[in-house]
Amino acid sequence: MDDHEVAVCRLSHRPGRDDRMTTHVGLTARALGADRVVFPDNATGPAETVEDITGRFGGPFDVELNASPKRLVREWPGTVAHLTMYGLPVQDVEADLRAAHAEEPLLVVVGGEKVPFEVYEHADHNVAVTNQPHSEIAGLAVVLDRLFEGRELDREWTDADRVVVPKATGKEVVEPDDGE
Image (tube, rainbow, N blue to C red):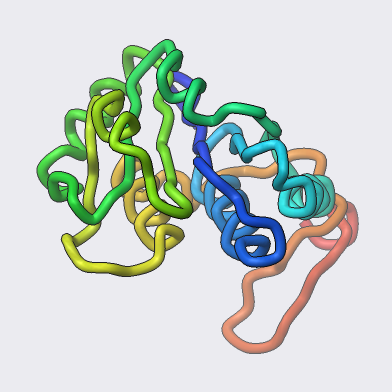
């Protein structure tokens, strides 16, 4: 969108059990302004799905498989924001996240199964969207929207094979040359 890169890292993935959740982390990251998503290397199905959606509905957006997402968190060359219900309220840290994003790359970390304490320690910000249990996908959506202050909702997509035409009722999807 602007400023430096925003990447989203899904820490863990249990094939079969987490396929839909991991896929939705990637789709939410893409739709709400991140530049790329990093999945554990065993999340090949979700990676293929997000790449397919990007191919059909446009980008740019990158999908990466990584053998050690925890190492990525440790070695990230910018700011790390870990989403957790135990963190500080997003409304208290969103200005800090925007300022950091203006200066350096931002990594937004989304957990999976039990998150090791080292992730909390390596994070520059442990961020909560409420301090109540709920979906990490909802938390990611709120954090990205707060980070971009709603600008991601007007994003222009390139290289799309399909474009959704906004309608009050009904559904319409066209090829870019057929209706834009």
